[in-house]
Image (cartoon, rainbow, N blue to C red; front, side, top):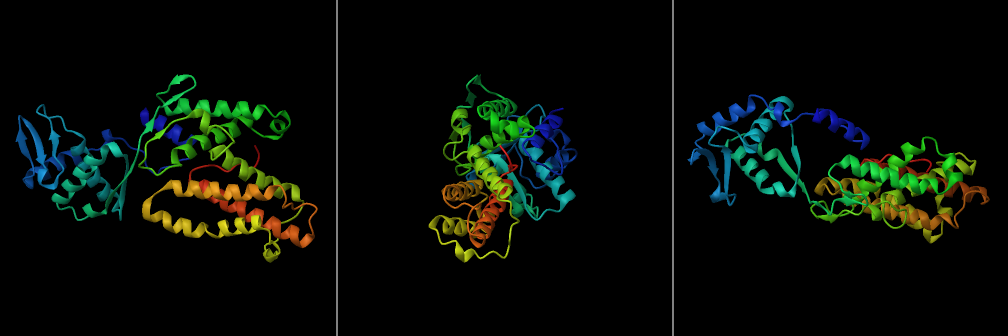
Length: 330
């Protein structure tokens, strides 16, 4: 039942996995794990429990089996890792687990190394900090779904304050949900992943400052410029006509996107994509007031439209990298 619910929430968050499974589905791997630990003489008895002494690696003592025979997480994780390698023959397996489990993952990786699994050096732990002060205006929140629902309601209230724009939006509830999801995701990924951060519903659900709704607004504004221009994007337009500092900033930032993607592989830091999306959104916003497409000289209009189109495509790619669904209207 829990996996069914996880799938529903993941789908809402625009997250897809090829396989969904829980620890209860780790089968005979646990039994094999205990047998291997015995065969490699890694287990010691401690008041009826079975432990692995890792003091010489500065990793303390890991309990593998309690005195009543109950296996613990380490045993299950050893079995799961072995089963996954048998099934997938992975080049790398990444554990995305909170920093509270740093010691546990170090003990797991060391145990797999001591068991002489040739793939033990292909494992990596990508950790993250904790969310502090997890509450909304309605009180303490336990479930992620409650947070997503409140973010949706908050953004829907904001949208309804402009009846004219609201009337132009197809499926306003879906759009409100997307903006709310963007608010939550951007706040969650704005700082380096190892850092704890204070949850703040009011701060994240605003169009002012560096927020998810602000990024969505920048993308929707770019889409609006294309719709209202009455022109087709000319990919041969002369960008040398864009001499204004604001236009140069946009073009420079767009050109930096490929390097951003390459560097992401070094540290798994979503905050770098968020920072980039904010920078591009700010650069775009600086152009809106003066660098018009409609009414400009035809050659200049073509160049500006190509610039705005490039910015929209690039911003949309960055947003999708963060699991956001870019909106065309809002």
